[in-house]
Length: 305
Image (cartoon, rainbow, N blue to C red; front, side, top):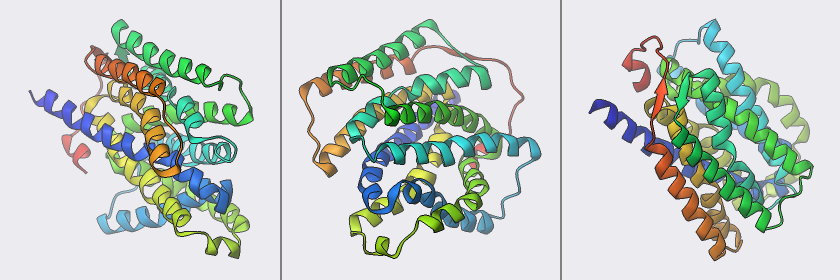
């Protein structure tokens, strides 16, 4: 009974994280024309570092161990450097719907790395539901004529690959270090290296950017780069990496919905139909068996930090 309760909480936290992440590409699309890819991709990390540094100091958190630091480097490489920079660069030339469709492949990347890193073994039914969801978004992309790969497409696919690795590593590390601590330390590790590139790209003209651009940049820094990861890693730690990753299939369609509401992009009945197929695969996938190899027990207080 306790395990079922933990899984439900994990699913809710995972859903909250996905909703927050779903606003990332629309916010990036608004901010990039005024601040550029470097400021949006790396500058948001510098801003987020100020927030997490204050939180870590107030809570007097202990420094990660050497072993944990190695895992944090992987999280930092994917979630703090690679994904924000690559997606910011791609959104200079791609519409949000295009990026949303390609990011829909993220759950499969996450599960693949979860199998290697966390020892999770999804059942055949789980894989079938995952592949069904992936095929649905691929068909959607082909229907819209987005099948050809350009440099921006390649950037998004690489972003999916490294973020999948980061998700799997971060979800596993959250069980012992604490959910929000994972992304907080990852941000602090990377931020010092970003200060100079951000400073060199900054210009006084950016100060006069419209309020929507500034709100988008601040959202990317505070929510997309930090708070959304807190919810996401907490969800994976409680509900399992492979199972919670299924919720990511909702993300591309939430992105398209937000792009429609905030950017005026159109939505078709075909999009709705594909969304239904994907949501169905999520429901099936989260209810299938996922076995895990035996690991050393972790004190429950680590998850409550």
